Image 1 (cartoon, helix red, strand yellow):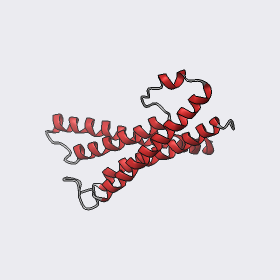
Image 2 (cartoon, rainbow, N blue to C red):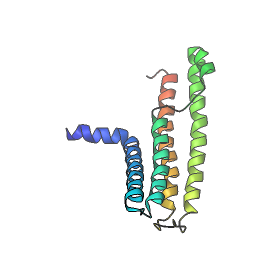
Image 3 (tube, rainbow, N blue to C red):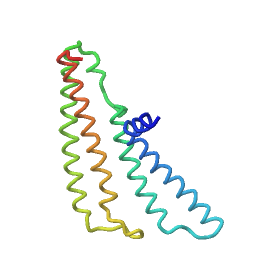
Image 4 (tube, rainbow, N blue to C red):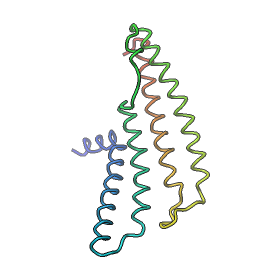
Length: 160
């Protein structure tokens, strides 16, 4: 039982965290609406925390979609190629995505380093906690594309 729970968490950590942040968004918005209309007061930090949760939810969900290969792709030409050229095209596409993802990951780390001293207006949270969602998401995507590239190279070489 414990092994299956840990395996589930290990396999779906990005989706679990994305759902957690989405739940925080819904909860804070609902509570803030109730507070506004019933008590004529709002939670001062709710909007800021909702925005932070939204940013994390978006980037973690993007990494989860990337892991499942659910992003939009135009592969009509590749799918019409014969078997061997199709395999080469997939490896080439993986290499292109790897280079792009690595570059964006690098840029996101630089972006995070520029946000060390800046803090949010109400909570006073350093922006690095918000901006690091970008670096985390692209790092996860980088890990996934390396996995996809390895799989496609093995298929190309006939080892799968």
